[in-house]
Length: 149
Image (cartoon, rainbow, N blue to C red; front, top):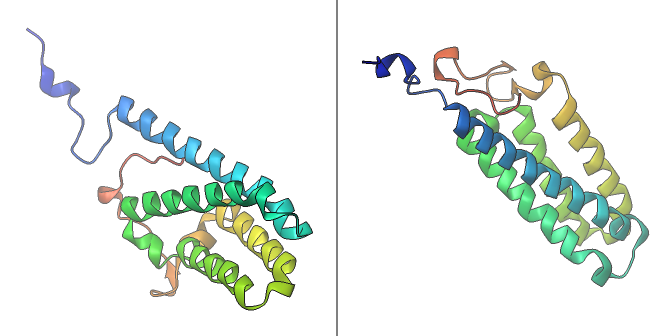
């Protein structure tokens, strides 16, 4: 007789299968987002005909929304950490293109640069809480197996 309880995962941890499904889906959504941003960039920066890039822009916005939803679901702290706040600033900058369309290329380039800092900046920068004025993260006992690798 085998002891099944020794193979059970603690409640807060993901099974290996679920971890990989979530990890691969997060990676696929991020890949779709980068593809949409990369292809629609030409349209924004060089004022190309909208028909050439609009669907790619919609892909970028939809996949970006999915990534935001995943982050908020994973941790509500994302909303007050710089990685979340800067994401909302990026959305505000993109919306500002409607008010100042002559600055569209410059605004878009700023948004792209902010994206690099959000995605690849040091954890101390990304996890800095504008509310607490210090780096915060989920307590260790509350963390799920990380999907970020």
